[in-house]
Length: 115
Length: 115
Picture 1 (cartoon, rainbow over the protein chains, first blue to last red):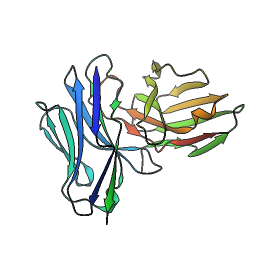
Picture 2: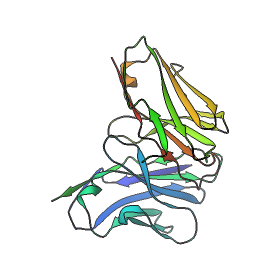
Picture 3: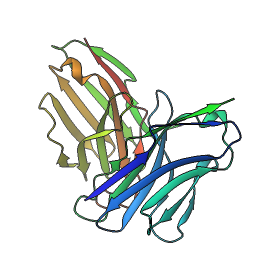
Picture 4: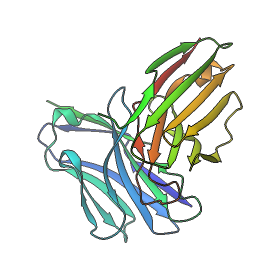
């Protein structure tokens, strides 16, 4: 079985500051990990994904995430926050077992950007 | 622009009405999903169709009835809904329902209000 924990339901940073959104996962099989962003009144947009290979994954809009198996983490970072980054962010996991059709979402982190 | 198109964007209906939500994708994806999302919560999986066959029903009440007429279309028929069914309904698709390394692509959703 898989699960995802996002630490911090709300993160606020200043424009230009580092963004760090935390995600820890639990999986009995090698996980496939995703970060999605949801802007107000929109659906979810894929930011990046980790499947296999390089553990540092680059996504859209300057975001990146690092898969750390030893820490069971997949934290999302961006060096310099922009006002347009304000949104809800979801970490998600899918497993390679019989439940592969399901994607398990974390509870979400709302990112606010201060001018 | 999202590659998964949902109509209508907004729907208000009474508890005795019958209505349908529609979802369309032209990416050649063979798995399609319905999710329900309440405010400030992650999406909750309702149904999964894989190769036009219903593969997962997450114990959804029978007042929600999914239909997959072909590989590009997914409908959700609504009848006798309750006020607690008011939510954002998201459709998603992925290349294959059983390949868990593939992300899901989401539409912008239908915001449903039950009077």
